[in-house]
Image (cartoon, rainbow over all chains, first blue to last red):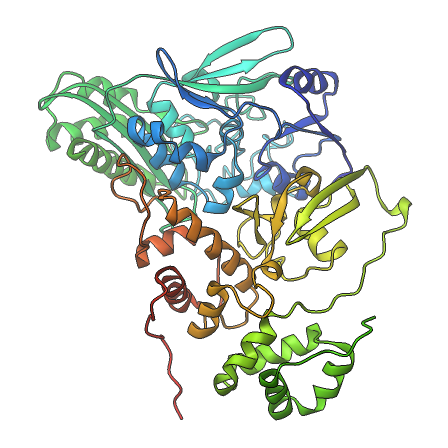
Length: 326
Length: 260
């Protein structure tokens, strides 16, 4: 690791002020991704601002939904009685990710800021536009079996790794951010970015901004939701394809479908075409199949990941069936 | 250096006298050290300790003697951070380089080499320790963030001559082959007992919306909940059996037999 100064922030204002002052500083939450990146010399901060002692750890019901403190641990969030009861989709998605040890360390805010596990991003001897803008993308013509089928660009074909965020996307969450002057709210769909010509930017946070919490609006999906994750081994592996599905039903009729996909794009991929199709239709296998086909029609495979299109179609149908069954 | 001669129990004396006679005097004079421990592990994996179970159990529970490790010279430390935290039952105050992980601090500065460095990237679980009651990866924890915390390592699980039930179950079920992942496996499994008692959910839990209540772990649940600890020797069936026995307190059939 490159040498760095270690400082513990005393309150959120102090943390934001310190980060704003130093363009090469970084916040340390759970450290499960950042430390790894620092060991590989992918991240090279010269100052680490430990935010682990800040009191942003509350999980509670609000007037309009639920609040997750940015620094509450993933384990605590997944197991909180309110979350298990009212947002089982979120619990399930969190528990699909990483290992017990990592979930005990990882924070909710940090989970959203995970960087891609693209092996070319991690290997500093390889070109990577995300790591070194303008250096090229080794994955585009390299080993890209794990990579994107939606929304990629010639600059970057990496996928976003979080499971938790896929559920948050389906649940229409909002990210609460503290800046040096104010607080702002970022709708989940605008939080993570597609690579375009600037793959070095994973999300819309500016340097100096601190995630303080995540807000999730009330919903009627608890009884009909499912998180399905397909991966190379049954546990402790990143998704090839995952689907978070929630159905708001009136009898057999779908009032609204909430669908987001992981492992397929540079951000949580909200399956809007499938959602639009399902709205107001009966929950039948035929409709689930049609919705999945509509969504996957715009997928564009890379040389090694054509299988993800059929896998995505089947996983969408499977998740919808499981959500319907409840 | 140790002043007093090591007091061996009769069972330990018999074990050394029969199996490691050339080391008996050394152990009495200068204590049970890492080399003896490794040799004992070799005998254990060859199945030679079966008739010395009590002595072996007492020996495994002994803390391996370690010398005091001197402070590093000050200019060997960049961006020094003073940190005080509890390791097993004793408090440690130490000046560390800000880059030191908890794993390196335990191994290189405090002399507790039970926690293992497998991958050093949070992928294998060999470095698992218990911090403030939760299992975590010491290779991805900066020691500087441990101020005021309480760390339990494999060395802190036994109570004097009495093994933690999970350690005893791993021995009985042969829950290892090379043993490198074992300290992490056992720390992970010990913390898992508390998680199961609290009714924490896993990805294998079917009714996640139901109220949390104590869970009797199935094979599938153990596999899911222990997936952060990789065993390249593939001792998984024996690890699962050991965890089941430790959780239920009841005999679980061993997956192995003596063949002679």
